[in-house]
Length: 317
Image (cartoon, rainbow, N blue to C red):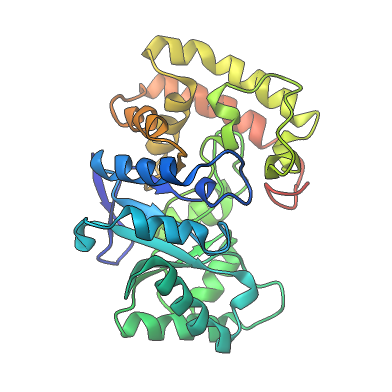
């Protein structure tokens, strides 16, 4: 397992980050707490010692599961990231919200603290970043990150504090930030750990056209799961199959490897609800896609993703 430093910080992460979104239980369905805890433990044992969570993932439930899962491990060898909700960006809300996350995680510091989404209320980013820098100066935060921010928003935030890592949505099917925040991050030496690198399951190849998720599953309203885009995405996945067969890997492993080999990406955030999913995902670290095949898949990916309409976000058309 390779390791990478985030920006100018001292935080080092492995080439995959374990995503704790799905285990929170409020967007994806089907997670079971004991299997979720076992999945986190399996990730750590496989060298995936960086765990990404947030209060939004089950109203603190995901953070609680992280707390339970890492008991008995050397804290200095675990990297924990959590997030400040967009509704809590006002100056007076930052510290109480952060301290609640510390309680839910059972920690006295976090390695990375992200602003989860840019403000929707007009709260000055100057105030938010100022409070985050105070937490960093106190040793309670090692590294500040921004999630779902555009290039212009990142530049504005950096006027008031240090930003060492971004967390955008990115996959072979979703590349809205390629020529915006991601190009900027590469130029500036900012780390990038994208979420949903498997397009919330589409790139695993397990969903046929017309597939319906259980009631309450957030993917029912997500942009790529609407027609005609869902069927078009399935056609894209089918076009990937010959490449997966060539390398003797699954579609998920191929898609994760493509993400890992992108020059502007540090490490993808890969979720799992069970240990066997972790064991499958980690195999993406065991092979490399040739330059020719990478270029061919990358061109297919851009052709699909760049033709999508200007969706509001992955979560809403």
